Length: 180
Ligand code: 5GP
Ligand code: MG
Ligand code: MG
Image 1: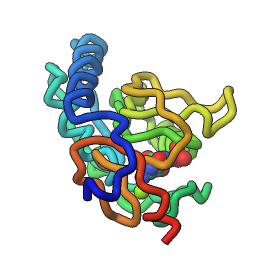
Image 2: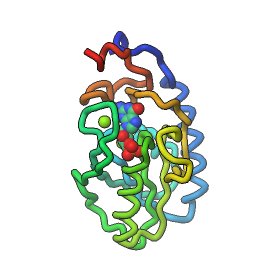
Image 3: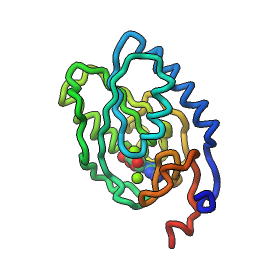
Image 4: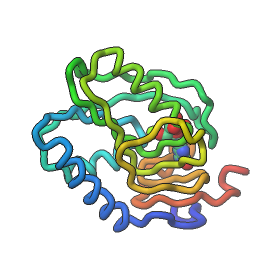
């Protein structure tokens, strides 16, 4: 897999350092609450696993799956619910955990869905934020690991056609991989 990567952007060590920083921030935020952490499948699985270990609070964990990419390298713009939560969100303090906020359409969709179900509060923690991909008045994540350039990234949860999610770092794919 390493041979398909042009450049490593965030090493395993750098990511762990960032999980530690975000985890202690979130520990302070949710100290007296019991948040419902919602991991956005499948990309946020590695990040969620590392982040929650750094959060020293009582919490619940659930998973939701939406799609917008359909295997390409550009967002399709339409978001579809693929797998719903098991947990009721009414009155809950929800923390969405995502791998990357790009156009923000996924977040807009998820926040509308859970607002309608009566969530008491909603915050977003994302490992990466690509602000160039959306208007300046677009959605904002509350807790961000890295501001990333407007390039197609893989690794640490992020895939290309299902591959590379298990890379321990985030990198830029060699262009010939997706031009082939
Ligand atoms: P958004 O709805 O904000 O446009 O994007 C949501 C999802 O698109 C992200 O959670 C992620 O799964 C996928 N995505 C956005 N940018 C990238 C990227 O650079 N690489 C990969 N592999 N997926 C991305
Ligand atoms: Mg995602
Ligand atoms: Mg994907």
